[in-house]
Length: 217
Image (cartoon, rainbow, N blue to C red; front, side):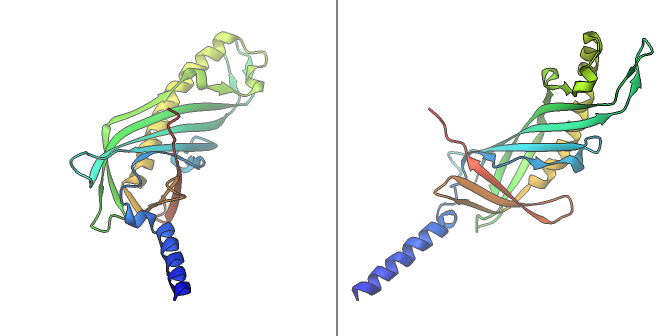
């Protein structure tokens, strides 16, 4: 009989480890960041490559455990090849590559889709969307810089930052539509990992994995 009780205890422990998300439906509350950047080049046709590193902060309304504020931020890196062009002094600049770094942020609210509390619905406040392309984060490949006068580089930097802001903002809006419903949300690894499924641009399921952000203080 003792061995039977021991076996039952082991089963219960195993079940607790695998069903953490079912027992604690608010385990996803907190700050999370993606395990790795995701490609978003399809949303920015002008880019030869583009990635987004997502961070999400879920909060809970004190009076309502079924909804709360949510904050999405993303660090976006993109590159684009540029063909040769003539300058005002009729010299020719060799083909080069430009890279930009941007930060996007938006506020929203979350609530459970149904009583099972396995899916979240997200409503974004599009008026809160901000996209910042820092000119200091614009970089040109070495062959652009070789022999170029600094005023020319500065002019291109400012124009590039302004042009990319509108392109990235459009891409962010397109990408956000994929996060309006988070399916099969689950917290694992003793609360250190969050996963859920979203639809990609083709309508296929895509698993997103985030890691909990630990406050150093």
